[in-house]
Image (cartoon, rainbow over all chains, first blue to last red; front, side, top):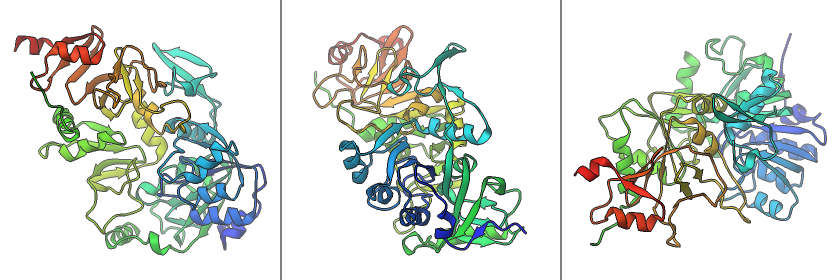
Length: 241
Length: 219
């Protein structure tokens, strides 16, 4: 019997190695796999390359990982926010490397890794500082930049529900990078609020099929993340469908 | 003759009035988000958010914010009936694949040939680009919403951008607090100047060649 459901976040992350490239889902506060990141901090892996849209907010999630000194390099599109002070200080002290990538290129580079594409030409960034040193080509009269895949050793994603085969569904805009990152890593670990029996997820509506998922771990819903009444109704009706 | 600059809300209202029924539109972070407050109630317009929303609705009532439902600026939003969620790669395919009709973006500078600089002020600032470059090359029409002059009094419409570029030759139209300026193969064409502002005065403030639109000249 195949059962990808792992009993704890600690067990799910036990084999993460120093020097790994880790894809971390989330956009702003939505879809951040906070419990997995906390467990990664406790696990102790260092010298990490983190791929995330942002570079952490406040002192939780990716910011906490940065603060713990575990990250050598961050690959992201938007590191600077009102409360990205942990990253800002490390960056200014030259204690972290920043690889800034346009958001759609970031996502597409991971898609390419997951889809077995060797490289691709995109018009995004052509003629800008972010394309410096990259191969370019005119296609249909428009400048394009050659971009390479970003593959993760590990992906940490947050989904709403999963089953023992690793099928996942997400919730609202918390989906963001999750499905693409899940496809782009050697080991994809998904945290979910609910694990369900096989067949409980509507096969027409599964967003990430289990082939992209290595481990599923259930985490408790945090009080401050508790959905509102309207949201709970939304989830119930989806479950009933 | 004296004139009064438009407020940000007045610029936003102008832009909103120019968005046709059925358009798929992305409103950039910052000033352009104001446009959402002025969309005509009798038109169905699809707002796209880069983090995976089509049919984005207004801010929720206080107390019913949902941390899983935010816009590109990370503020709580709602979903209209009929709206959809999707993942990031699909969201940016909508931009790059030229499915979006209009992107309204803020800017530090726009050049006479439509080059856009809106992501980085250079120097010591920590760079952050987000989806700006993807929107700049992807949307069928890129409209810029900005104040005509920087706080220093310098024109933000320039012969050549001095700030790092976001995209080359991408801007179609500029809405400022003084006028609407179309970027055309024949150069910049100004229309809808605020009352009391003559075209030669706008030209002097801008420091780049501008012509009045034929419609205005005839008026």
